[in-house]
Image 1 (tube, helix red, strand yellow):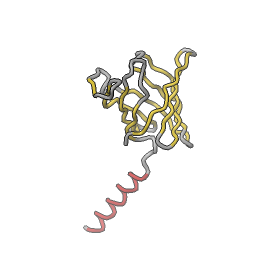
Image 2: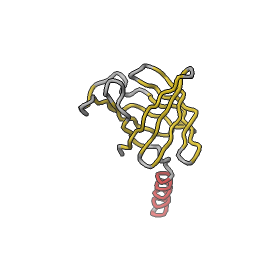
Image 3: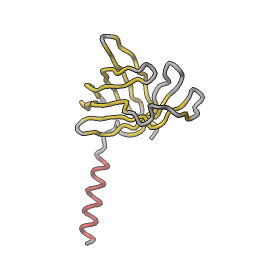
Length: 129
């Protein structure tokens, strides 16, 4: 029984160690209104998705938002060396969905997106945890 528990614990630890570095909670850049959010990024199938889990006003006070719980990132594919591409990002302040790419560099995540040839720099997000 002890061997079975040890093997199960080792498998679980190996799975946790193999988590992608983009996974976690990210603080977005403030939007046009000064609001920002925390986005939980995790694997969804072979790609990565992100859900808005908290919203804040410009002073940093948590606010209610109809976008909390909404998927903000989806279909983002990891290509190695911190490059994530071929996904979509939804911008609540503009109510638009962009074809997006992300570049991970340590605890910074640069987000960019384009729609109909118009591109927007989503800024650099910072890791919360």
